[in-house]
Image (cartoon, rainbow, N blue to C red; front, side, top):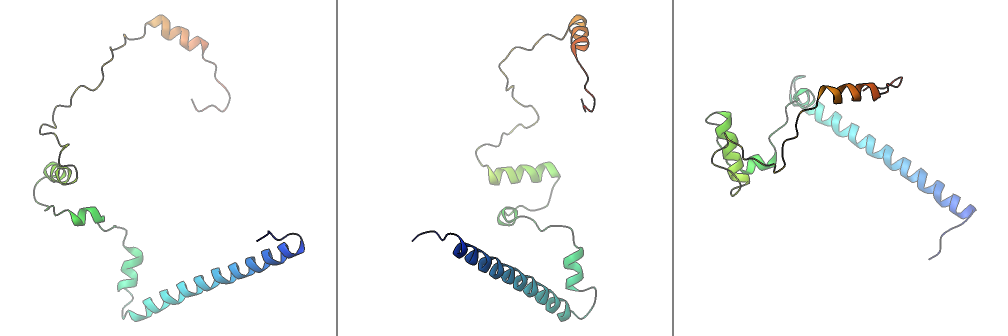
Length: 130
């Protein structure tokens, strides 16, 4: 199968564009009709359509629905239960003291001379946010 060229290519391109535009219009029309039907089924103005559009809180994610964690206890206990369910082998018993993760020596603080030298060499450009 060969690619179309010239006038034939333009014909197919315009036909594709028209068909795609029609398709998008039909999708938009179907969405609007479905919303109108959804709103007309409700008997009161503060029914399901109002709650659907106004409610900003999101339902819990599927992972938390699947994990059966009761809401009893403080936030640390709930978080620990969640971590134990999600990552059963990596939860540490003592979360109050974190292990030392770096193996490099701590650098000495900057001297006043180093700070002065860095300030004098710094050039400020117009419009710079730094």
